[in-house]
Length: 140
Picture (spheres, rainbow, N blue to C red):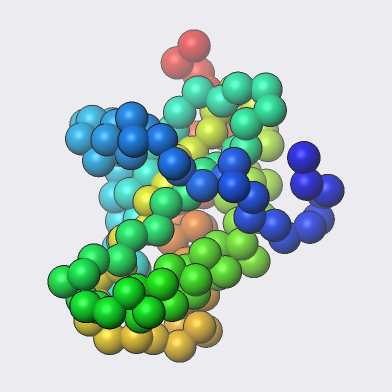
């Protein structure tokens, strides 16, 4: 488990499960918000003992960038912006030990943006998600 205060993004914090990805996009339980050029789709999921508080997925369509080099560049920018600012969300989620979030970041623009712009948009999305997320899971 990463040390407190370290900004890391481990493999366990990435959504690799096809089942969870389908659940995120196909179930009616997911919420969505836009901070152009990004769209965030998120939903709360039950959290196991050693699981991270939030897991992410970053998607950039071939429709916007034909070349993989540019798609990978955008994904790196979004992951780095999330890594540096995920504390906005995880600080809020520590109050709910049985709940975790699955978040998908989708790129919506055919233009490449600067890191500072991407970081500001990721911050906006994380703050809005944190505000809309309940601090404790009362459904169980």
